[in-house]
Each structure stands twice: as C-alpha cells, then as structure tokens.
Amino acid sequence: LVGDAEDLPFEDARFDCVGSAFGAFIAPRPDVVARELFRVVRPGGTVGLTAWTPDGVMAEMFGIGRRFAPLDPDQPPSEAWGDEATARERLEPHAARVEYERQILVWQAESPQAFLAEFSASAPTMAAARKGLPPERFEELTALMGEMLERNNAADDGSLQLEAEYAVIVARKRG
Image (tube, rainbow, N blue to C red):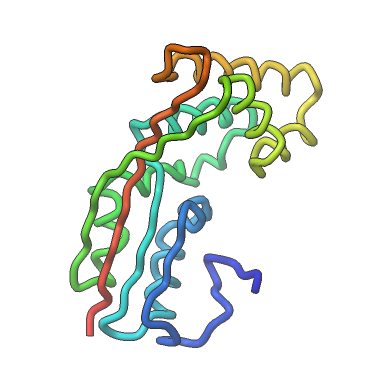
C-alpha cells in the first residue's frame, strides 16, 4: 500500500506499532508526520523511527545534494529528526516516553567509485538529480559526492567503509 506519511490511509488507533526506517523523516512537515504516526497507533502503542544524525556523514551527503536542489526555506532538513532534542520536541507532545539511541551503519563497497555508481543508480534523490539537472551539474554533484566519500572512507585498502551514524527513536503513545 502506498501512502503519504502526512496523511496515512488508516483509521485512528489501528496498529499496535508503527515504524519508519529512513522514510518518514524526509516528509516536508515533521510535526504533521509525528501527529499522523501517533494517530494510527493505539493508546500504549509504539512509534519507532530511524533517522540520520545531523552531524553524520549522511547529513554531509544531504548537504551536498541541497546545493543542487535546495529545500523550501520553510522545510527543515530531514536529518534534523536525528537530533535528540528535535526528535523529543516533535514526539513528546504525543508520547508517554521517548527513547533515543545512536547507532552506526557501516556501508561497504569494492571502492568509493563503486559505491557512488550504485548510489547514483539506486537512490531516488540521485535519480531525480540525474533526470532534472543538466549533465554538467550532475557531474559536479557526483564529483562532490565522490570527494565526500574519499574524505570519510575508513578503509585504507582501496575499498570503501563508510560509517554512517543514525538515531533509533522509540516512543510510546500515552494511554
């Protein structure tokens, strides 16, 4: 079922648990998303989210992307969900309690170039950039992404090991 995170196609209190793994955090109106997630969870139920942290490598990647497709100035950056204070501010009005924990996801590839080729072919934002940008601007974008990967690469053998920090946020609905 395809749905809008800001207008979930379910009745109130339908689920025991609602989760989003790196999805709901990209919706343009985070307060609306938080309200919707809690709307469809029964009292005492759980809302779980993952989001990239604002000081991690994925936030750096998003920042590069925003140079080529800037956000609406009223839309907060998606990685703001990964900031503990921001996540709490958005969820605590609906929650009995909010738990926050940082984790590391290690992305590995044969090389930074191989990772970038796969990412450019599969990430929706990169597909949109490939389609919407003039070829020279897309090349500039991928060059900057490649530099970022090289700078953040934890491997020293030509392969890629990218340590991406993210937040695991679990909230319990009042009731």
